[in-house]
Image (tube, rainbow, N blue to C red; front, top):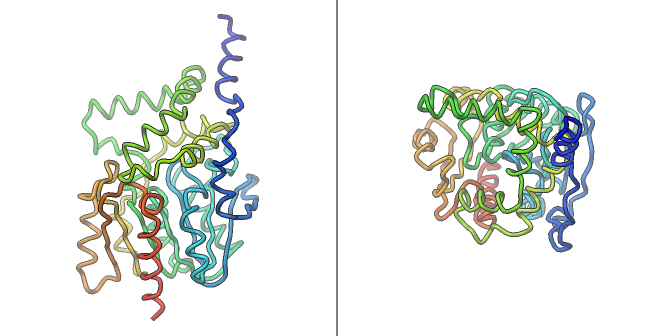
Length: 319
């Protein structure tokens, strides 16, 4: 195969138009959200807002988007809150430029979004790496936040080499380099993003498999077809891990609600012991609640439970 035809193959794999979505799978239309675009540092960032009242800011996890909150936004806004949801740069409907992605980049995005669109203390709510961004926001810019909610909070953006056995650390480092390579990277990404692989990954991390619907698979798949998605994926795989929750929590004095799915293989319930200890400390405003038969994404797997727990906590914090 010639160099030119190889490049054409790579380009077709990376930017190939995705097949049409089934008409019934428009998750974001179902939530009746009007999407808006905000230009941040020259890049388009998609967000949505619904309702009136105390502001809540919803921050998705890796590979997700605004639509991952589709089961929560209607209930929260109907309860008297102004709900903002944002697609982090590189995800969802936001632009996917070739950048060095990091938690610091997204933290700056959230800070500027708050300054431009909110301007009063908000409650920040995040799942997975979104939860870690919540902790960073509360710790580093406390004037932005009146409280925080984290759901199965990630301990880092990537594994720290010192936290892995050396052979596995070497394998992960090599995989990151291969994914970013000009020839192999698009080929690997083209396989990783396939719908059946997304469904397989969801079956590993969702404790409630009834929540794994074609709608959810499509919601995660579609952004992977956008120009630049492969390079975003490669950049994130090699990004710095960011701060540890244990480094951030001593700086946080706002009320914090911690919700944790008990059957999460990515952030096991055992890793939540730090939050349990804080919840037992009467001097700290930390509330901890585990959720049985639930995996990494409680808000999507058990939305009725999460919405009830969140609204109950918000009401208690008003008094």
